[in-house]
Image (cartoon, rainbow, N blue to C red):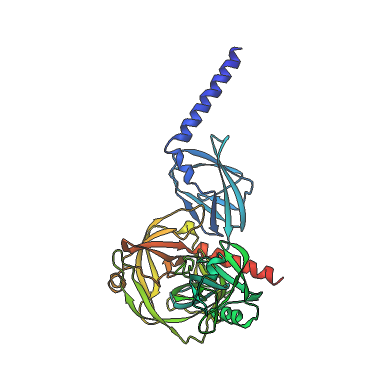
Length: 437
């Protein structure tokens, strides 16, 4: 009886002790411990968690991992107060587990070992022409018919600003001209529209109204192309795919994401820069060069930029190819960006990576950067529109791309990790393989 009571007391004591440890500020550092970490085959990755506890590190995949310079064989003791260095000599995925006192599991982590990826860094100014998968409704209008009566065919049919019209009377359309031509060509003026809204597709009907000038109208303002100047981030010479901009393209009037129907990139030349000031965004002003000579297509428009294939190899004046750094390799400190501020000449400018934002879920705000180069600050005031996609280079690696500017301080902004952009390339490759099957 006494033995049973003692066991119960010991159990209660241990439970309280473990709970107190788990709630301690030092132990709470495990919340920052990633569920997944990626490393490059043969390269060392360092985790610096500053948790002053000893753990036993377990794995079933022994023989290929080196921890702090020692080969991991099933298990070893580690102190997370000190940096933890991990290296693998084999590609693949490993399951790691950290146990307190060698018996209490406190954290499981997947370690993915990837091959090194090399790309040609960008910095080139590009003209972007993106046609949506249809036409985008940017306004609802009235129509005055032959008798002078005001009609609202589109409004009465429930069409909203931001909708994408993908088909008219069963015909696929990409331009405003095609929409108008079909409405006026068909004898039956009952118009059936296929609408995309918030990821859903549906059909609606309306009646075209004959205006005083004899043209049938349905009371819509639409746009069929988004165009502007941006920056190429990288080009993969092995696959021919590229990544640019570092963020998604949205319609300027509706704020809706532009779904890719057709798209292309061409050369662009920067003619001037409107410098950024506090609360006043600046911009690169450019012109398209040899507009009829398309240099690549646009296959996807994602949170992390636009992606597609370039038709001819891309060259960079500073680098032939450089390795891509994984997000976990980026560090706070000095770095550079490459971009164009005059004509088509790519230049390097000094920046500082002020903060690395560790992420369990990818986003375009992976790091905070600050422009430190005096000449770029004098010329542009900092980060300006059109600079999005400018590659960020650190220690000879592509670590990311410029994405956003802080409105209240244009010398500072956000950058996206190049790793997330490369994942979009992988998705494209997989989609193309499936479609070609």
